[in-house]
Image 1: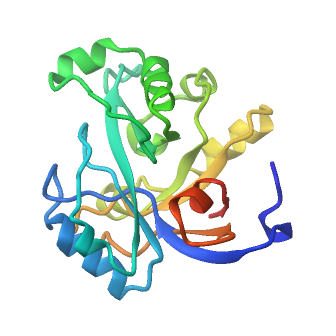
Image 2 (image 1 turned 90 degrees about the vertical axis):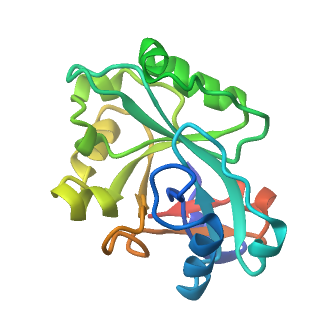
Amino acid sequence: MPNPFGMEGSWYKGNLHTHTNNSDGELSPEEVLEGYKKHNYDFLVITDHNKVTEVEESSRKNLLLLSGIEIDVGKSSLETPYHLVGINIGKEIEVPLDPNARQQMKVQEGIDLLKEKGCMVILAHPYWSGLTMEELFSLEGQLGIEVYNSTCLRGIGKGLSSVYWDALLAKGKLNWGFSVDDAHFRGVDAYRGWIMLKARALSRESIVKGEFRP
């Protein structure tokens, strides 16, 4: 993996996991964008559940918005779905609306589907999901995993997944580690998890090619 501190460019602050009232969040997309602008974020990904949220161009001023989605697919050993965050969707994507149909998919199929649509894929909150190390080791193709998730930490104290990241790296499976809000805007779950990203410019193309620092 390249060293972001050795790259040319500037550092930009962003959040990669955010919900609106288009799924189970409390605020409208426009209200979400305004909040992140006020907290001096440079870019944001809205990742509503199993759907892509569109935002009017006028609301995007002074904040770069990348398209995103969070899908729940497959079944873990706990009989619960895996959650996958897809960032920078390059093509139209359709996810089964029936949760039973999504659980019939294998999680690797979900990762492959998102990648086929141009996404960078992040495994969301593995500690909150109760995944085993073996389940984690079996996955291929994701960019990384969430190491800090504000909502999971403040909600039930299961937002820190650094042990999973350490295990992946020790296994030789190189993954980025990400800090996110997973904001739903209930209580104080927003503006607490972010990454700093080194890129040549604040644009979608440059951000996608940038290097992350949790």
